Amino acid sequence: MTEDEAKRSADALSLIANPIRLLMIKALAGEELSVGKLADMLGLSPSAASQYLKRLRTSGLLVERRDAQFRYYAVKPAVAEVVLRLVSLAEEHEFHPQGQQWRSNRRPIKRRPKR
Image (cartoon, rainbow, N blue to C red; front, side, top):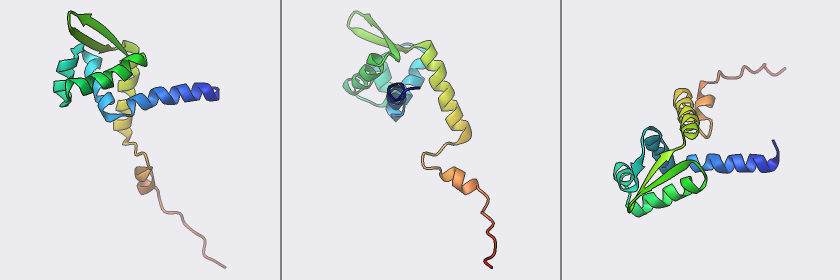
């Protein structure tokens, strides 16, 4: 993997690292929803929801369908599968960004007595 490829991958992962966008992806993984319905589900204004959705759509994670004045969004199936699996792994293993869980589960280091 080149540095450019790593940057693109990190940028893509940063999109789902936002709690609101992650909730949107989870909601849209199972069904197609309108902006208004998704906004209601997440307690957002329709304009705020639209801004979050725009970032996800322009990045290629979502598909959009227009029906008259309404826009409906869904997560691409391959994206949904990967994101939901990542979330599941994070929940199963209780990952902590600062490693608190790892540190608290470690056995203390046995030090040799000084001579």
